[in-house]
Length: 71
Image 1: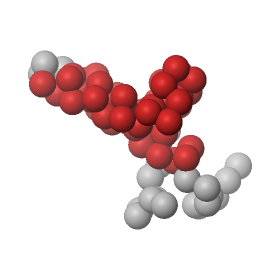
Image 2 (image 1 turned 90 degrees about the vertical axis):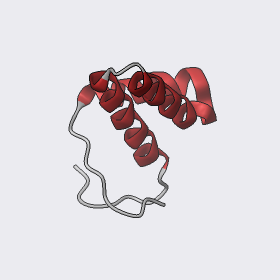
Image 3 (image 1 turned 120 degrees about the vertical axis):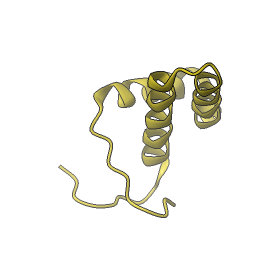
């Protein structure tokens, strides 16, 4: 369960999460973290933050309990 509520407005993050979940299954979160780390190590802050957002979406999608208002 998430310790705090996260809000992700970026559609690209949801698309990236969907693609990683489809290709990596249960390892999707680890893959997002690995990609974020690689981007950070290369000094690419744009892709680093992108993969961090994708990881947050994967966590949100995997949480069995909804939080906040659902539309």
